[in-house]
Amino acid sequence: MAETLNVGDIVAEAAFPLTRDSLVRYAGASGDFNPIHYRDDVAASVGLPGVLAHGMLTMGLAVQPVSDWVGDPARILDYQVRFTRTVVVDAESGAEILVVAKVGKLDDEAGQARIDLTVTVGEQTVLGKAQVLVRL
Amino acid sequence: MGAAIAAPGLLSATTKAKLVAGAAPHKLSPPGPVRLASVPINPDLQGRTLEPTPPYLVGREKIREFSRAVFATNPVNLDPQAAQSAGYADVVAPTTFPIVVQQLTLDQLLALPHAGIDFSRVVHGDQRFSYTRPIVAGDELTGRLTVTSIKSLGGNSMITAETVVTDAAGEHVVTATSTLVVRAED
Image 1 (cartoon, rainbow over the protein chains, first blue to last red):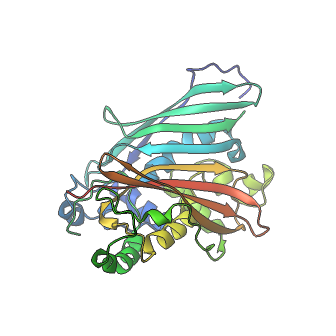
Image 2: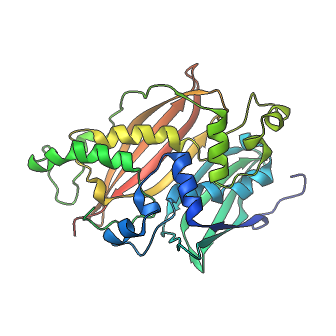
Image 3: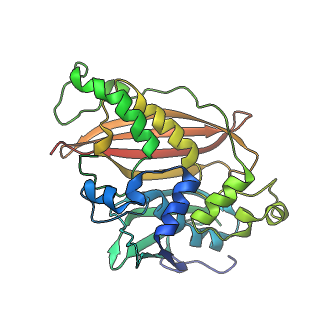
């Protein structure tokens, strides 16, 4: 964190391979047991293309590279996302979520940086306006 | 389960169960004075603050379980000694952990008898957490939800709800804000 930061710098990158196991684990940890996140038949019955990852799981994992980069969780002051696209998790092949964290804005006076996340599956962005405000 | 749900982020099954119980009779009675076909949400909800939730005691193992579920590998999330070395009383919750307390308040909202929120059409539009301090195991948290905005956009309606999470001393910890989109009828 001592190095000089510039807007546009990539501060962290990570890939998160999701399987159905990941979804069941998140369901248990969060208490969100909506069956569209683990049952193909239920997902199909409501017209979905497949079992979906919880939006809050995608949001939760996407901030981890930033959490590791800043080191101390107290430095994360604010985190927001817009859910723009569903993440279908295939029973056999799963899904891979890629996260790239870039400096979006610097406020030297306040000692803060806005880190913008690009979160994609395949070539498609799944979160919009994914921004983390950190204290440097 | 008949209605199509095309939802990036959805609410919990418990929310749904409560809502179905609460909302079904509402379909028989018209909403209040403002009756717009594209805004099924009761506009009287705007500005409404609900009762605070009972205290939620944050457990160390719950934080560790949640951390593993969101792929958190930072030792302060998992290892009490690492957390203590970093100056915390115990393990620190991942950034999105407050959803657990916020969910209790969203359940309250959706279960209101006259809210007019049809759960089968609800999708999670956006989400935000604004912190004063991180959550640590041992915290006793209370959530209190206020409906800050109800809007209509392209036939859908959007309800924004802000849950203020405070600790046992009544001090602010984090504010969790959700916008729920209620899709227009097909």
